[in-house]
Length: 458
Ligand SMILES: [Zn+2]
Image (cartoon, rainbow, N blue to C red; front, top):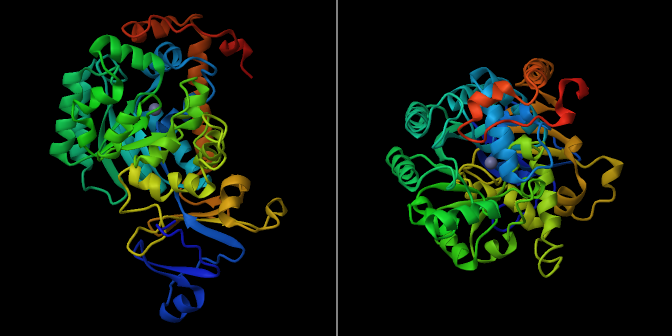
């Protein structure tokens, strides 16, 4: 996944202290280097680990709780109230452990997260071995642990100050949630703080047409122009979704330092739309891929997003199958995605000087025979059961399909405990009396769908 798209047959990679120090034909590498440990790759592809450019990892605990709803209904009537009720440090630690397990198993090695209690999330990420940009959500109205902007902003800044330069795999950042939930003055304040602290910014941007309508009504402009006027595109910004924009806005993004993260499953599931990604790439926008949270996906398998991105754009617009070649789709989740996420110097390709974030994919299954084109197989045929090894920063996190840094059984048991709490609360109080207090400022009540009532849950 270097710029030339080099593919080595019978190659080898030498890693020293977490850094890739040599890449080449196996015979040459073996003659030049002595290794303390060798990971055999016979019959396997060694490829860069995937970069998930936008997620809310701990939301795995809300997986399947609010499906088949329009974005704003989903967000305002279900997700915000449930977060207000359930999300605390314990929830985030439990959710993040489960999320780390899922990402390690599905060949993700880096991710950009936006979620509450990022300090707790950071400690879990540090122990599970993944690489992450963890951005603290800041929002104008009440959110878990916060009354509104002032305290969520202060906590975000405190998190960024505490974690800046503290851990080699963790980058803290600030996340003004979206242009429709954060005022222009507050977005500007977040941009200034991010620049002052030298940390990245993440934001939801131009996700659906209700957002574009709100921004037009409030500010008589479009979401991308709106945030551009507030300095967002001048910062190290990772903008999620970016579905609704015109070609002039694409050019503004292309000329900026911001990356745009395509979340095809989430955008389809919430009915947000289909981002014009091929045109954005043509115009030079840095585009990456994301899963979004598991409440709108419903998993963190970036591998699926690669395949979906490769297929989706062929079937819309001019219905041109050449518009998203397999190699381009793969780049969105590796080198190109790392660049969009601000991690381009660190990860995303197997090149000397980059951190050793690597995965091995077995090609030995009869499902994958015959093999003519490895990139084609990786995008269109391989699935997550073919992933055998995951390495981040030179540390083996999964060996022969066994995750070494997260106890899977314990993580699942913990998640089940948290789910029991959520189920009890959902069943108790009918239309959600308990939700009402937390969510009043946002959406009124949480109407509990019949199928989620306690008595109907399995
Ligand atoms: Zn999101």
